[in-house]
Image 1: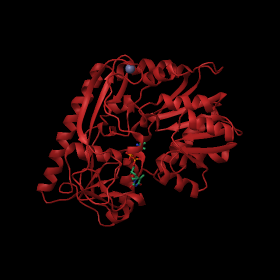
Image 2: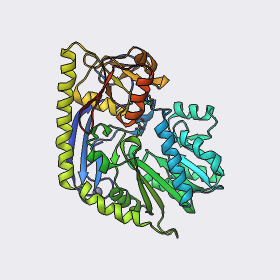
Image 3: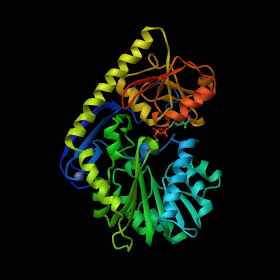
Image 4: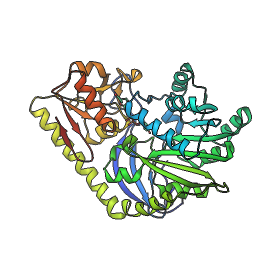
Length: 405
Ligand code: JHZ
Ligand code: ZN
């Protein structure tokens, strides 16, 4: 449904970018189908609370009925989990007896990392096929959307939580306030809620227009997160910016009447964001978005005219946006390498581009990889080189179109 006002503060919205109509990024197909349903993808901005939100939101059951994002095995993700654990324990947000609940826990990778150091862990995730993967791997997981009802059920059955972690899921809900109602029902009085999401300030700076897809209904800054928290019985007491997923904000929040004091990092980042999300910065983001699209089209068609071949690397949600926005089909990008077994053989929506096992394309590499998983750039280039793909060149789409040899 199209929104008429800011879903955080009710303020007036202005258009930031319009990427056109496209199918949801994670609707991977069994057969190529160019007639697949497309939905408008446009991002609006509220200057009152610095919120960036999607204009049209699809219902959750449509987006997550059958879901293909499985957290990959990645050294940079492992490093991020270790860093987050250090922050949580050093600053007293978690301890050896903590009851930890992760919302949007996917296959349970983070819970497995924290579990040896705390009292108990439990995952909550709405994607039935992925919950099955987590349970098989020994991670206790409730299959549900997280809101006040499911949170009350969990609190009754298992008690309250000392730490609730919500990584990359507050953006995925048209009404994230409902997740805060859930957190309020489940968190112990001295508990801490950790919200991690793509960071709007970094997205704007590095022109990460491909972070825009139907699953991402919000693009958070500390300013917009604080506005939402404060309207819903919470306040931010600490914040960090991490490199993961192209720049993520990690916000530590507590119930309004908690005794925990706010660290000065909070006020400092709020101040910095005024410049990072200024009207000039937003205007530059919009202009560069269209310019990068044009440049990518020129680079890829030049390669094709030379008789050389391009494959994508990483069947990411970002890649679906990028290729649909650029209008790339299997004529421009003949395949896409990916390590996720359930993605293999399927097609990227709207493009006719088939996903091929990573190992297959690394053994028989194309002339160029369009790096659609640019957030794993160093890791993937090293992986390709060590698999013997010495000649393949990489087209890095953002922040500037760049060829890495
Ligand atoms: P990756 C997802 O976005 C979707 P995506 C979601 N909406 C979200 O919010 C963010 O994550 C956080 C592959 N790969 O993580 C695996 C390799 O092939 O950038 C993945 O399909 N080899 C929940 O989809 C993809 O790349 C490798 O060595 O943009 C990466 O997807 C590695 C490390 C990854 O997320
Ligand atoms: Zn607003």
